[in-house]
Structures are given as C-alpha cells and as structure tokens.
Image 1 (tube, rainbow over the protein chains, first blue to last red):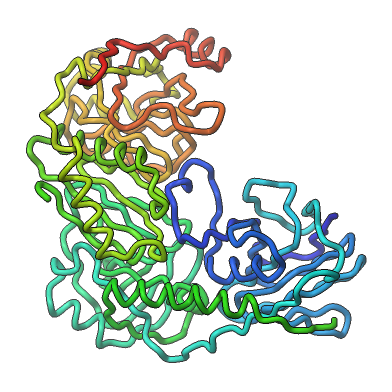
Image 2 (image 1 turned 135 degrees about the horizontal axis):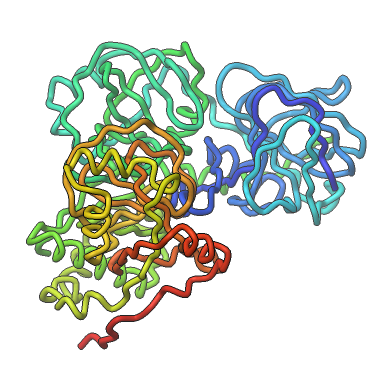
Length: 297
Length: 242
C-alpha cells in the first residue's frame, strides 16, 4: 500500500514512538523520535500496532492520497483532517478507502501523528516531501474484527504550570534563581524539534561544568540572556551546562504542544510524585484501551 | 554504599557519579558498574551509558521507583567488584585499536592552526599525537568518541563546521573521533581510515578500550579507505581477570 504526499508545507517525518522518552540509540542510528511520544504511542495502540512502532509526524499543513484501503488513527495537535467534506475525528481508529485524499490543515503549535495499521517498508526514520511515496505493508484494509477504540484525551489543563523536578545542579543556581523560575510567567519564544525556548524575567546562569554530563529530553537550561530553554528530541544528550530542572514525563505532551506566544508557568515537583503520575497515566491508558466504542466513518 | 553519589536527572534517569580517586580509577568503576548492570539483565533498565567517571541509567519507572532504584544501586555497588583495586596497565590495555590517520592537507584543515597555537612544527605535533595510547573515556552525543587527554592543552577557537565520519578533532585539550558526520566547533586535525561500526551497527571502540593513532600518507590512506575493512584491530594483551 502506498500513501502519496501531494502537498507538504513543513515536515512529514517517519519517526519512532518511543514511549520510554529517550535512549542512547539516538546518536548512532540517526533515529528520529516523536516530539510528543505519548500521543504517537496512543495512535499506535488505537489501531493495534505496538506502541513504539513507527508513525508519521506532521508539522504544517499537507495533503495525502491513499493508494489502498487502510486503518489509521490521528493523535497529537488538533489539526483539522478532512476527506472530501467529512472531518476525521482524532484519537479514534478510522477506515480510509482507496483514493481518499486526506487534507490536513495545521493549527498553531505541536505535531499531528498519523499511525497506520501495518508496518512501514522504510524501517529507518525518514523525511518526506511533496511527490514522495510512503510504502506500508501488511496493512489491515478495514475495521473488521478490530475493537473500535476511542481514547478520550485528557482535557488539556490550560494554564496549569509545567511541573519540574530539580536538576542535579539545581542548588548551584541559588535560591533566588529558583524562586524566579517558579514564580514568574514566561512566554514561549520558539518551539522546534531541538528546543522550546522561553522569554521572561532574566535568571542568572551558573558556571559550566568541568566535564560533560547527560541531559534527558525535557532538561531545562538557562541561556546567555537569562532565558530558560528546554531541550527536545533532536538536541544532543550531552552537555557541559548545568541542568536547572527537568520537566516531568506526564507533562511532556503539553510541552510539545506549546506554540510560540503562549504563556506558561513552572512549578516544582518531586521525583516520587512524577513517577506516581506516570503509573497513573499508564493505568488510564489501559482503561481507555479496553473501552470499546462504535464509530462509523 | 561507598564512593558513589546518585543524582536525579528527571523521572526516568539517574547519574551514578563515582568518586574521583584518580581519574582512571573512577572511570574504571563506572565501566565495571555498567558491565555488572548489563550482566544482570534487569527488566527495569532501558539503557545505560558510561560518562567518564559516572554512569547514566535510563530506567522504566513503572517497573521500579526511584527509592527502590537507589537501594538496588547500593546493593550492586556494595557486593560487586565495582570497587576492586585499580587494574594494572597490562590488564587495562586488553584491546587497543590501531587507527591510521592522514594528517595532511584537506584531511587536516585545522592542524596548522593548532601547531601555531602550541608552537610546534607539524611533524613534532604528529609525533606527539601518535606516540601514546588513548583511553576511550566515553561515547558522546552525535556518536563522538571522547579520548583521554591530548598531548597539548591550549584553547583554540574554530568556526562551527561539518566534520565527516572518521575526523580526528581537538577541542579544549581533548581529542575526539567522529564515527559519523557531525557538526563541530573543534579543530579538525586529521581523518582516520577506520570503520567504527560492526555489521550490526554497533560501535567497535567501546569505553575502556584503547586507541593508538598512526600517521599514514595520502596514498596509503586512500587504499585503506577502498578496502573498507578493519584490518588494523589487534589484541595486545589478553589477560583473564582473576
């Protein structure tokens, strides 16, 4: 089965839905990991793929032509997805017919994920542009014998602060800097696959380390202007800068969906609380995963 | 638990930093610790990495909480052979990769600049670079191999540019090798003819192993590149650990 890319405004990337957030495979295998791994994993689960299978990450508007019948699920950013005059719902398995043209219109911030039942012929992560064809094999042609699952996405807790675990060098920044981080409001300056940067009250950075240290996706640093930035999937995982804090896994989806111009606050969180939230989310997935709905296209 | 400190790095990873009783010893502890973890095949361990004198563990928090992980690390470092005495040089140098490097012309665009900065002639500097073995301390982001200290220590500013796979890079007193194409702001001082990856895509030079550099002419370099096989890897000493 082939999906033809008719139009592509920004990026269509084949990436791995790495539900474990981060591994050291990255530097060598040139793998692209989903910016919002949680949404990518849910998309795969909805259509009975493995949660860490490859899926398409889309930023910007695009148009896709399906060469055969297949089953897909859209997750992530609330981009509108239209086939003819019909709007395709998000967070739900949906059947696509041969010759369907899926028109995706981007909204501000985040990425849309398209999980396709079956496996991508290209096993490595790749970027596609207009005119390219995406090959898929062993795809299911319809929803027959599939539980039609609908994942009810947690209502985005608008305005809620992003929760941070103090980094290994948090104390080196001093109590005043930490207080500024947790009491001030910041505006999103830029957001891409490398980092989400903020602007607000200037926070003093501390001296660099004498050696290199590991920085997970979600690590928060202070730049030379005193603005915080949080590293994302395409950033190197080693640095000599001190990590001030790390975003908790449960809030990574919200971080990935931030659009430039949006306002955000940060609040401190303990590692124990962050891990309790991961377990809670996991249970929630399972609960929703088992919920059977009926959906007719 | 003695001699190591656990640092929280988000809700899925920790850095286990070993004490600095002489650089090599702390490095060795980190390597032994990671090796021991790999042998145990813990279901909670997603990945581990040696980072000079510390180890990074990425774990699955749905399998093990931070509190339990600390206890597990304490147990491993207490009972294990992580803190055995320092290895002898012969024991350490069980595997040395001999890597041919071309230090000429276009393959070493920043060598002249480095020579000028440290006041040595090109041949002198090449001799100093090739005279010793380098410990592979860790594998950095972008796949860079971080080697033990270079024979010169000066600060050199270079423009950020692309270094092709195999480049030998000098940066702030350290030598690095880029097994894949990367962007660097260090000085590119040579190009090696060595395939750093096995057929299965695993990196061949692992932390704890050694690298020696040998200077080759442009013609020999081209021939070695054509062969595309690692004929240079050799075992120096093979001592079974007691």
